[in-house]
Image (tube, rainbow, N blue to C red; front, side, top):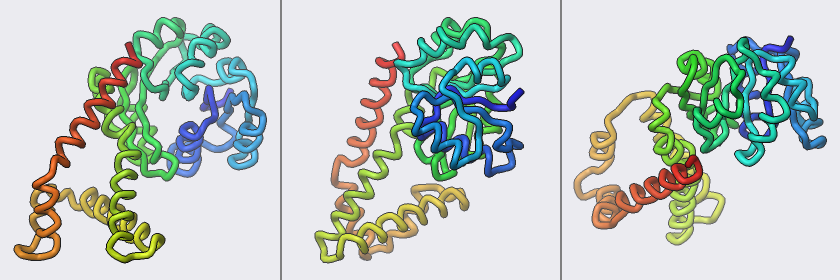
Length: 262
């Protein structure tokens, strides 16, 4: 019997797979089986990670006690119909499917022993992801997925907010990066230099703040020397609706998450 199975072998599943195989999670390629209907994608995963692949989700359900559900939301019901009955009391199902709540998943997979839900984000593909877990054995699931970057446990009632902030957040940070890079070009930098300066500045700032634990307001104040260049720029930001726009952006994403989960 395999230690770990995947229903679905898309990009998010691949990020988790890569992290679990390369970290200290205790998984080797021979411990894993991935069900992926796209033959080319399955062949890629088998070649890249040396894991077993199959086109039949039943092979995973029959052969694994820990299964990660990583298909599109519209495909969950079919997976449950095909393989749900094969997941018994000794099985643990961890869903990373956006919008599918625990009560819905319990109805679809009534025989599964333990059921957890996780909201990851795209950065798991770089080993710097953010995962939030809830449900059965959420602490153990979070510990396992900390191999992808960072992981915490929160009540499911927070998952719409989590989806908005960390799930959708990579797109919003990339949008800010795009604005910074385009602004750099507008004041005379070439495109590649502007992109690198913006990207490394964001990366370095996030790394420092994460590792130092510095308070954000104090950090900003420390960079803003009175009468200096940063202060001149911050005056523009403070005079704008920037924070309100960001708050509205997250609120819109959270509301959409609620709609999709309803």
